[in-house]
Image (cartoon, rainbow, N blue to C red; front, side, top):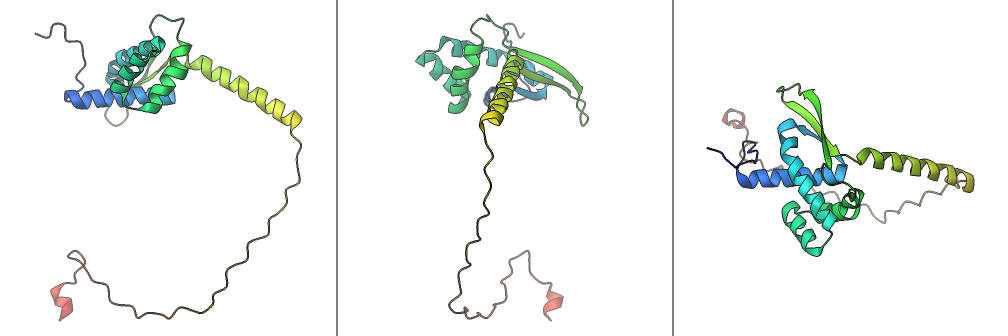
Length: 182
């Protein structure tokens, strides 16, 4: 009986499964949203939530535990510096799974897994970019662009003597058939 065995096996060995889930969480941290199969999304969710909980603690021990699981320094840095601080007021439920329907090739159910507060971050970034564009348009004056002269080409002092081309040595796959040699 499988009592108290919650982990989804995903048809992989334990090492392969751990590596897959760690890579999926790192991709989620990097891209804020990933498209994957529904089974993988459901398997990734608990690990991603645990990593955010470690990020909220913020201690060196928590950072080392996250690094031991994820194995990507940049992902751990982004998790602790950007993602975890956004979730300080939330007590769990940091991720959302959105079902997408069937994949065409094998009819596997597909889903997006994303951070719950990713939409807010996207709106904030868009507002910042818009404000920067308006500010940049007001303060920035166009300067005339000067065309650069092309660099003079190096002159050849003397032409190199042409070497006689040797016939290429053919390997096993490039051999001519025996009938052609005769």
